[in-house]
Structures are given as C-alpha cells and as structure tokens.
Length: 213
Ligand code: AMP
Image (tube, rainbow, N blue to C red; front, side, top):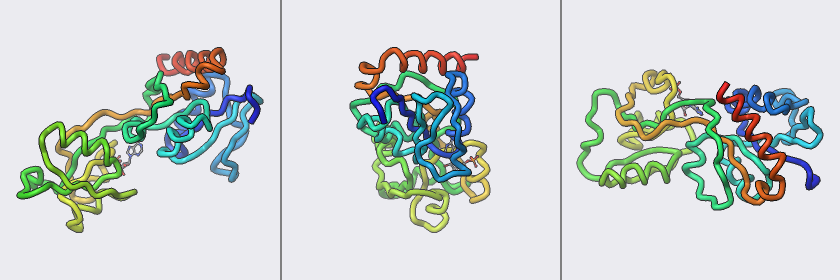
C-alpha cells in the first residue's frame, strides 16, 4: 500500500455491518461486499482508503504494529490487548453489550469452597476484575461457547458478553455481576496519527459527527 493510503482494520461480522453507516458519513463506502467475495482488503469509493476485514482480536495487533492506520473493534478486545502504540480517540457506540459474570441459575456459585473456576475468552480482564475484589480464581481460557463450561462442570461460572441474555437463559445460566459496559471503539496507530495527521483527523471528526447525530 502506498504511503498516502489510509488503511482501516475492521472487525468482521456484526461490528463491520454496524460501522458501515459511520464510515459512509466520512465518505468511505466499500466497493466490495466481504460476504460475497473472499478479498481481505476491500477497495472503497476513495482510492486512498482501504478496509482490512479481520477477526476482532487481530484488529489491535494490526494497528499497534502500523499494518493498519486505524481500527474498529470492541472494547472487550481492547481491554485484553496490551499495546503501547495505540490511541483510542472515539467510542463509536455500536454493538453495545455488557461483560458479565454468569453461572448456573439459582446457585450461589461465587461462594464456592476453594478457588473459583472461571471460564472465559477474556483472561486479563477477568483476572483484574476478581483480583480487585480479593477473590482467588483459576481461569480457564476458552475461544467460544463459554456457556457450555458450567453445564459440563468445566467451571463454576463464566465471564462473557451479554446482549439480550437469551443465550444465557437457553443454557440455564444467569448473569449475576456486571464487569463493564462494552461498545466498539475507533483506534489509531500513534505514528500514523503524526504522519497522516490531516486525513486521519478529518476521518475521526466526520465519524464523530455521525456517532453524535
Ligand atoms: P445474547 O444471547 O443476545 O445475550 O448474546 C450473547 C452471545 O452473543 C454471546 O455468545 C456473546 O459472546 C455474543 N455477543 C453479544 N453481544 C456481542 C457483541 N456486541 N459483540 C460480539 N459478541 C457479542
């Protein structure tokens, strides 16, 4: 990609879809549909702007290393990533949900004897949360379907994203403790912010306008 190109790494799926109207407000509309083509880098109507469509957890990695100038991903992902080369200038207020502790319905699972076993994708955030409360935990890292863990006695509880609560309910679980609110954020590589300041400032301010409309 040329030095004048602005690349934006976007988390594929729900966040990508909800980010499209915000990007459109900044004059950025992809000319390909990632559901219909297998391209990983999408052209847009602006020849100087490309979208890189990747997994949520990879977005901060690409931006931290400068492989993308900007990124859009969930706060849940950003809280897990320890990068020093990122700014997080904007809450996009899309894909809102909550990070919650949940366990078998009606069980006082937090008062288990011995160490609490917690299954989660969010190892760092979960460790911080329980450490701050003086609760000793064994964390079991999973990559998906966290709800299964308490059902098969892999863990006492889980820490996971909750939107409607339907997934928890369907699996006999209930959310008990609120870890934090989550939404998607715009992130910027620090060096890109210096080198491509005018264009990036313009994109941030146009997206910000769309968020607050
Ligand atoms: P729900 O049944 O509506 O509470 O949704 C819960 C399921 O959707 C869980 O598997 C979550 O990991 C996932 N989920 C909910 N909200 C989000 C979000 N904003 N981004 C990514 N995954 C989410």
